Length: 127
Image (cartoon, rainbow, N blue to C red):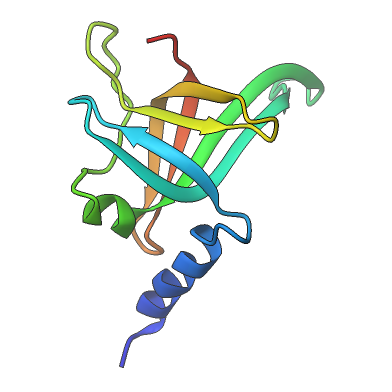
């Protein structure tokens, strides 16, 4: 009989990866150019809060949430930010509601090893 954590991770599949719900097609490319397709959550928000003033300012906060077990099952490792400019980064791409596909590089990875989800913080990528 599965415990609460195993049940929560199984429920995550239905929540995060449901293409008829909030799930969204996301493509992940590792630094060795291995490409895999997933369904997860994506965010691309144009307004952020300045932490010093508390005032809303124009900016861009982009992230995706993917199920850890799906990434591992695809043969990839968990993505992470690559700090050196001369090193190929992890790349994420997804379309907006108008169908325009954008490419982003992973700048930070926040895995939740309790629930089995990883949040990838992104920035635009021209590569």
